[in-house]
Every structure is written in C-alpha cells, then in structure tokens.
Amino acid sequence: MTVSFLLKPNTVTSMSRNNTESPHLIKFLVVSTVSFFFGAIHGMLQVVPSIRTWLDSIGSPYGGPGHMIDPLAHAHINLIGGLVTLAMGTMYYLLPIISGKEIYSMRLINHSFWWTTIGVFYFYITQVVFGILEGNLLLQNDLQAMAQVHHYYGPIVASSGMIMATGFCIYLANVLLTLKTKP
Image (cartoon, rainbow, N blue to C red; front, side, top):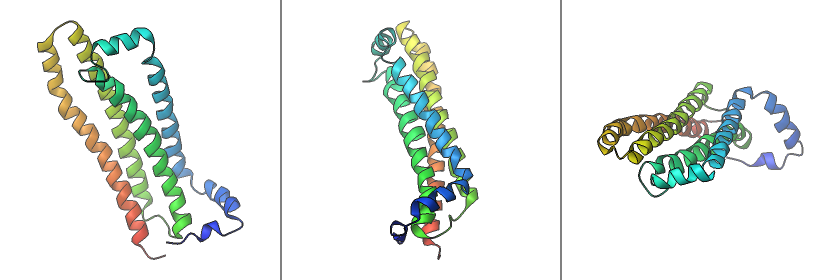
C-alpha cells in the first residue's frame, strides 16, 4: 500500500474529479446526515424537562426501560448510523486512491450499505418503541405486561444487531479483498 497520492500535486483536483465518478457513495453521506439529524432531534427531545423527568422515572440511563431510549437508541443512531456509515463511505472512496487498487466488488459496497443501514434503523426503532412501551407499563406498575412485552425484545433486538453485523462483515470483507488483490 502506498501513500503516493499525498505527493501528487493534483491530488485535490483529481479527488474532486473522482467524486463525480463515485455517485454510488453519496448514499453513505445521505444516511450519515439523516442519522445525525435524527440523533440531534433525539438528543434535544431527551433534555426537554418533561421528557427528561419521564426518562429518569423509568430508569434512564442507568437501567430499566429508560436505558433503551437513552443511551442505547441515541448512541446507536449517532455512532453507527452517523459516524460508522460516514467512515464506511469515506473508506470506500479513499481506498482506491490510497492503494491504487479498484474496490473488489461494487455489489458488496451496496450490500454493506443496505445491511448496515437497515440494521441501524431497525435497532434504533426497536429501542425507542420498546423503551416507550415498557416505560409506560412500568409507570402503570403493570410488571406482568412489561415482562410479556420484554419477552419479544431479545429476539427483535438480536435480529437487528445481526443485520448490522452482517453489513459490517461484508464491509470488512470487501476492504480486505480489495487490499489483497494485485493492482
């Protein structure tokens, strides 16, 4: 792997030109932006005094249903949806420039994007919905109903996590296969 792109005088110009040749990577930037937007709205809402009081009353961020909303949902939409998606798109863009090799598979780029995106939004929605449902049941002191609802939480959150993990693994495989191929 070389870093000769740093020594070329036209690096910035060529990177700008390549941007139009990489429209398939724009979707990573869009999902990252949308995720950060949702994360910002989520963060602003959870500090509204009435919402903060409700979250604190159901255990946020220390346990109970409240931790599903703050910090789990909030952190994942920002870190995975925003930051990791942006990093994936950036790596897919920069890897050919840095290594001088074509990305191993465009199809794997699309798969890593969709699996990760679906997984992170599925996880986020699962955390928020179960946090609200179980939180309201906790406040109503209906622990039996809360236990029945929570029975479904594990398999659903595990499936969303597996979808995210599939996207990460596809991404990692595509990067490693790109680096392994000869230029």
